[in-house]
Every structure is written in C-alpha cells, then in structure tokens.
Length: 313
Image (cartoon, rainbow, N blue to C red):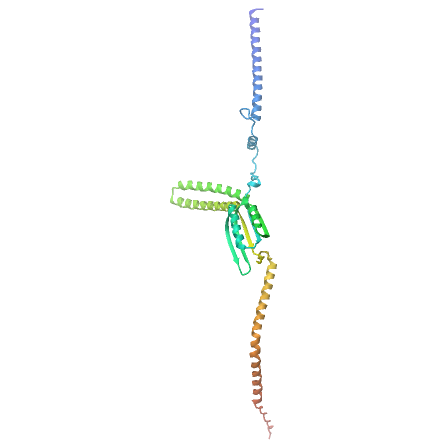
C-alpha cells in the first residue's frame, strides 16, 4: 500500500470515530434530558412533589378565564343572626326577672330593655336580652326552667352573602377614596380642587355608610336577641300579634265599630228616654188644648149675599 492509500484509510477512521462520538453525546444528552423533563412535570426542584394547587394554578393561567365563585364556607364559618322569644309563667315576676338578668350576665350578655307592668291581681315583665351567639340555646333553656314555658319562637337568618358583599364593596370604596386623595394632592387649579374635594367627600361618606352596615351586621351576628316575657299566674297573655290582617282585619274592625256605635246610640237613647216622657207628654197635652181653644174662639165666616139679577129696560 502506498502512502496515499494509508492517508485515506486514516482519514476515514477519524471520520467514523467522530460520527460515533457525536451520536453517543446526543444519546447521552437525550437520556439526561428525559429525567429532567419528568422532574419538571411531576416534581418540584429538590425532588419534592409538586403541590396540587400549583398545578391547578398553571393550568388555569394557560386555559380559559373562569367566573369567580362564592367561597364554600362551613357552618361554623357562616354569619348567622339568631333571634328568639320565650314566654314563661312564674310565681313571682320580679324575683324571676332578677334571675333572668343574672343568667344574661353569666353568659356574657346584657339587658337591652326591661318593661314591667303590675296591677292589683297580675304582673308582667318584658325583658330584651343580648346574648353571645354561642350561648343562645343554653340561655333559652335556662330561662325556660324558671317556670312553666308557654311559648317559644326561634328565628335564624343567614347573612353570609351580605357580609362577603360588604367586604368587597368596602375594599373597592377604599381604593376609590385613596385615588381621589391622590388626585386631590395633584390639583393645580381652584376649580379642580373644589370638584375633587366634593368627590372625595362623597366617596368617604359612602365608605362610612358601608362600614356602618358592616358593624351592624357584626353586632347582630355576634350578639343574639332574646325577648323574655314573664307572666304571673293571674296575668292574661297578650295575643294581639295573632290577629288577622288584610280583608278579615278590615271586616272585623268595621263590625266592631258598628257594634260600638250602636252601643253608644242605645246608651244615649236610654239616658234621654226619662226626660222625653217627663217633658214630652205635658208639652204635647198643652199644645193639643191650645189648638182646640183656637178652633172654638174663631167666628164662623159670613156667607156672602146673592146679588139680584140686573134688569134690562
């Protein structure tokens, strides 16, 4: 073999070795890239499993926009307003009213109103209590044990959506107030200053109104209202709240007014009847005698003479 042939063989060997090295490096790179991809998809950096909400967040950013949904709150996280009333017949109204006040204070509440009526034979007391919501049921049961329970009514109102809506509106209104204040600080003319001051005042007033509503809801949800009615054994229960309404109420009121009017009319006639008999009969007799006397004293009217017929010549 000459030198030229040897050089050709050597160059061919070098070329084949280079191609094999390139293919091996590509295979190694691919084998190294596959675990890296798997780790990126299934694991976080450092080998820790990826959180489920992280994957959901990436999917939501790559997918279509979805409508916001209200939070699914548990029962113990919801805002509920409790109101109740209980009627109890007791032996001593004043003594039991003092016990009711003590029960409210022991539960961490207070008395919101106290109205009492006492007569010769009966006594009643109407006490309004503000009790923490978590002590509502236990306080009602304790009050029922003071005597004979005659009536109990408990109402609940779920105001969770109102609270969530108020929170969102308050945040938006706070942002509006802040933006108005920034614009007010950048005002360059008197007209702009007056207009922006009026706008900021309106936004602050709206914000104060929303915050007042939120405080009111917070008060109603944190403190429940219980109306306690105490009756002694002789007291008559007031059933005015059970009266009918609408057409039946109007018909009943009209009938009662008619009966009352007839009663008044008969009372007046009964009071006047003795006077009518005592004065009316003598007056009628006197008038009758005067008429007869006038008829006798009146002379008979003279008959006119007949005229002679005129003679003709």
